[in-house]
Length: 305
Image (cartoon, rainbow, N blue to C red; front, side, top):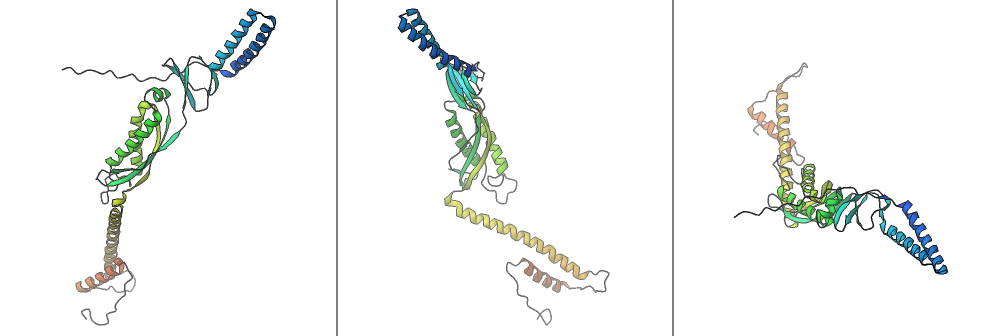
């Protein structure tokens, strides 16, 4: 059976509509209203139907001009449609005049931000976490924003929530001893960049530019937060103790080596046999690597007493 080929809709390309400055025509409209009133009074006074018709024409002209005016604020564009057909945009700020039959919908081009709700989702290792992000964005193609999606404001919110959830499932919260793994808490710059890239791919259909994304809320879910905190503390303690022991070994080795060496002074070297070196190294390691201050015991006898 042949599969039906669905032709995709061609995206609307943003164009510019022709319009003129509105202030000169506003003066014309005011003069037309005044002239229509004067001619109407004269027509009633003289019972002249020709003057009455002229007053009607002047009044109709003022009405058409009044319907043709629209306002565009800075960092804003007016999307023009004629009986449902897209005609173009006008981004020139100020009072403008265009065809009164054109539908005019203003779209803000200002920078906006949106903070996602804190979502509870499992990370790449199945640990429940809570995550939220802020998205900074703006409209760069108002035609796509108006006609590419149903509601571009709602579209940004929904896609932001979806992208944050997908990001949380793609990376672990923390890798602990694995240094080559990208984590949500340890590689914030790369994570934010990946979130912006993914969200931009989704926002292209709506004519949206993603300026910046940042993770604002990131934590383990309450039911596992205490256990994960103890694990992090244990990993930190192990790493610290390992560094202390490595440093203590180097210090003891240098001390034992220094006792047997001599320099240009008259000091004689101190030679220790294997038992004394072992005892000296053990005592010195205890002093250096101990968590609390040590209390020395002075041996006034022989080594084995």
